[in-house]
Amino acid sequence: MANKYWESFSKGIIKENPVLRLVLGTCPTLAVTTAAFNGLGMGVAATFVLVCSNIVISLLRKCIPDKVRLPAYIVVIAGFTTIVQMLVKAFLPAIDSALGIYLPLIVVNCIILGRAEALAGKNTVGLSALDGLGMGVGFTAALIVMGSIREFLGNGTVFGWPEGGLIPPIAIFVLPAGGFFVFGMLIWIANRLSTKLEQNSARKELSSEVCAACPMAGSCHGEVTDHD
Image (cartoon, rainbow, N blue to C red; front, top):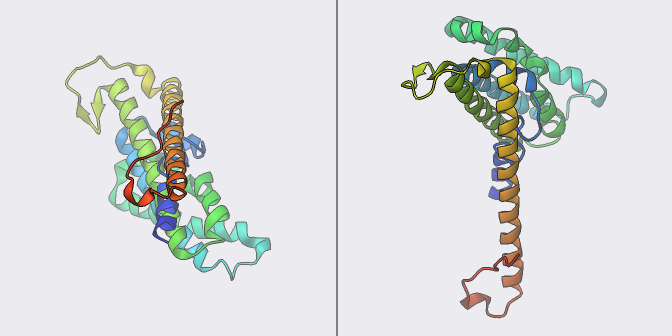
């Protein structure tokens, strides 16, 4: 049971990262990551909406008629997005100004609606909440890394702090072309990491199966080695 909940949470960080593996939410990803703070703000806002909407949709999954499930999901998501927007406007006006139209557009973010349709509408509250949290953490991490790289290379700062003149600012990295370049490189890195993790997992499963069939398994602590 614990593995089931851990899998539901952890898959959104690398294996099924919504930005770098599933390539969802590309518009806000490219638009707001000119600075690390912007990425953090968008990520936290989207995570809040993801977790809360997943919980409510999971609670109401047996009450929502199948024919109107998508409109119902959007109403739930819109409610939490409105709450986030009002809070950001009241307490973080700088972030609200930086995110602009992309903050209210969380309502139609493919990540949030996709998780509601694929998981929250069919699973328990616990799994739905962890799935939303994992996807939100993966989304936020991708935005922060991408924003930090673009801000460092484009403005010579990280979270607004000067980096000490290590390299001269390269303005293209805060422009769309630089965003696409960094985005592509991060997708490549995420794919390599995911492939490596899958290979390691397959080796562990093979080792477990072979050891289970071995009569000396109780006294042997070795692992199956890869001779490829």
